[in-house]
Length: 268
Length: 322
Image: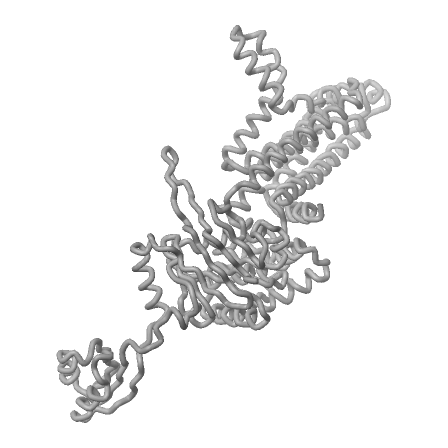
């Protein structure tokens, strides 16, 4: 456990010095801030627009960070041969993979926290700009803490995306890993279509295949409760907890797979 | 107990996409390295030196055979507490400083923060990295990275050190410092296993060497056993002699090679079959003076070249176990 933590801190240290990360976070924070201006253009919808855009920015930029840094983590070590010195030290390959993963999750946590703070800061400012009567017409307060549930699930989703990216990068090139991760993310958001595929095709085998994929591929759509929280629709705590557990189990499988592949790999 | 032992260590790769064919990177390498010795692992490019080191570090897995370090299988993580490794052309993390890198690696051995700092500072001093130690490694030259690589290999005060081409990228001063460092390690009782193309380094540092060629062990043993220390010819340096006399001696078979050192001054290679006193007497009669007479002995380079030339024909032979 100490080894994993040690590798994780190094990954975090390296990541926070990477200019790409700063650009992504700065751009996300800027977008959240600009959403205030967009809100001005839509009378009466200010808060909703800002919430929609803010949550979407957190999810999208989190996705870019997870994919681009997640894939580079292992690939760069192998390609640049820094792994040679590292693996000659008393560290297991499994500890290396888990440490890399933990480091990126820590990086994501800090970034999502920064984006969340910017998001709530914009909403808090907006809250001061309206009278009590206008605020009373909103379905939920501007700084509704219920949105943290959506952000929490976005974070679990990003952890899952990172695990997918890490797993794929243990055996494929960065370009292929990125394409496959984005592909899985898109499919995972249209997962319900796979489930109901039999309604649109006549072939039974195609329907079975689609149903199989529905169960095997990660169901990213389950993590998306942005619309519900923006419209102040109820999102029950058990749903959030069950979805988080689903994410954790899926992540555990992916990391087990990543460790299994990486442990057998030759570094030529 | 041997510091390093390999038994029939073999590594095959499959090359080609549609019709993969096995490529023998290392073929049944049997070798032992004793504790406290400096062992040179020599061979031309593609001979299997780096493959052997990667197998010993378990960066790749053997197709067959086995390897042990300090009596433990190479897969045993605990043995890595007692070894150090410098890979060929090392590369580290762009955004870490040399200090941070060494601190990171020291942390993998469980040292406290204060101990990590102490070890990092001492080793960076030892390899000649000064104020640059606080710069990010992406700003380092190749030679400086090599020095950091050597420092990280020694971070745990190892009992056995593996250096893959330790002189690579270093200037003459750096090479001299590394040679000195290797001798210091030996004096501390550390076993040093290093691969190199630079035969002069091996000759100056090693008690024993192994030569690999074409993935197979061509020769292994003490330098004194491998090299023929008896003279293979004489080097006669004479002054005050004309080129006509030298040509006459060459035509008579008394001289096999002539190097002009200056006006009427020559270095002559006299074969063992010719008596150098008689050859010199011939020149003396013409008024020449003897400057020096030295035996020419076989160097490691001569031996190396001979072994490499023999290697293809030797492929059917059993590897030499020492």
